[in-house]
Amino acid sequence: MGIQFKQETFRDDYTFSNSPEAIRRFPFPFDRDEYMYSVNIEQHMPGPPKSYVEFPIDIDEHYVSEMRDRAIVLKEDPLRCQSLPHMLPAEWDLVELLMDSMSKHYPEHFQLTKDGDRWHWVNQPLGIDQTFTFGDTATLPCPPMEYITRQCQGDFALLDQRQDNLWMDAGIVTTQADWSLDFDIGMNFMEWHGPVPIAHDIGVFDRALKFLLNLQQGRPVRRLNWTMTINPRLDTSPENYHKWGQEKATVTPENVGDKVHLRVELQALWRLPRSNAIVFSIRAYLISMEELVTIPKWGRRFPRILKSLPEPIANYKGLSRYREMTIDWLSKYDDGQPTSPGFFPD
Amino acid sequence: MTTLSDIKSRPIYAGLKVDEYARRHLVAAEGEGARAVIEAFSMAPEALDRTTILYCPGGSAGQDHETALADLAPDLIHVAPSIETLLVRLKGMLNTATMGTRLYATGTEGFIGQVVAAAVGFGVDHHSIFTEHRGSLARRVQCVHCKGMTDNVTATPFTCSHCGLTLFVRDHYSRRLGAFQGVCVDAEEPGVIPPAEELYK
Image 1 (cartoon, rainbow over the protein chains, first blue to last red):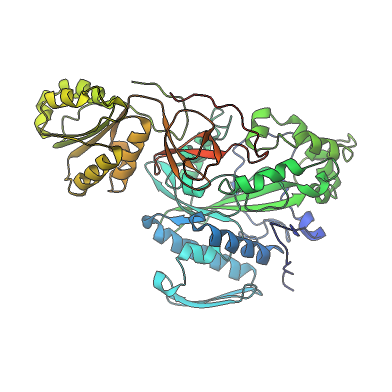
Image 2 (image 1 turned 180 degrees about the vertical axis):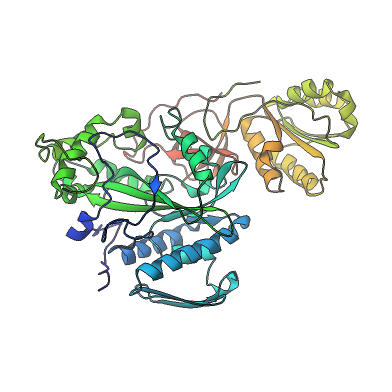
């Protein structure tokens, strides 16, 4: 039995919601009651069945609606998908990585057959049937990175490695937490992380870069990152901030449970075989406070996280306006009991 | 030389120093950058007969720095009426530049940024460009919303010269664009705009 894809929206009437199964597999990012930046990188190993890390590329019930939302963003703003000319080999590497993974782990939805360089790709949920020549851009309806990432959840950046640094030289970014690909494209690792507070001073980025420069093919890694979003909006881009920013001021004590969402990014990195570039995937998961507290451990832990969060981090994540209101709303779910170690529900 | 704050994405302008091994010196200077050129090249007079200077008086118009530059007696000096026209000339020269050409850029940060961005477009490694910041601290800012550039921004917030949104200037710099990022300041509460601070005079 395949995934039951939901029809829902991430804008305007915001009909997005999580099924009980999706809540249980949500990547809750806190394994203890307080939060600080760290180099929380681990091997991207297969996790328990039905978890968000069961497979390297996670496709879930929101797939079809997320892809529709991406298409809307790209239609309005093509600059969300850009690639510098030398990144074409890495784009093809990405096509291979995603098609192989999706067809292997979700064969009821995606099928790939290869006859030498002649590939046949079938994406049933989106109704796509494409025969093309691997490596020949003219045989696809659009450039290879754009082609495949219009069919895969999550934002993607392709990082070129040279001069002992990583350079963000291509990407498709339509579900971002307030950063601009158009502004950051061409920057190196330290530069694009420039605006993040505190982490530079405690050496997080130096260590992370050193680690990533040595990333091996076939040994991908992952980490979780998080922020909060008002309404289940995927496109919280700076480009459209003047349009969605006002929604931050609409939180009231009555609607916290429905409006305030924890937004978690599963970030994964793969070394690519031909280009030696790195794929950086940023897959966003949203959960409302109402949904979050259905897991008692998370309902206890999350208000404690918000209370102990250092001010500069809260400001950078843009939570200041509704942080107190959210803590107040959540506090009725925190009975003061100790929480068990680790991320997962009890 | 002005010391600038430690914004991670902002380039470091290490100062002009004549590269004695270069076969050709291509110098792009704006405004007070003329003084940096004079200081560096008067220490290395042997380089001047292989030196091309493109100069735009810009913010220093009327101070006749162009005469002082001409007095250095470089192989060629071209005085451009605007940054835009200087860049046209520069790109023409980069297009035919040969191995061994060293590029120098000096003046306001917005000017340096545009020279570096133009050169990168011709395959010049940005690390290889010698730069020195001189003159005002005014910033060149790209509106993240409409993508329009506004030059000579001295205060934050300011009004985007293209779309009219009120933008605060984020301490985040793009070398590709040669600009800082401007983000709508009253997106969350329209009309609530903090007083402008003259931070970049």
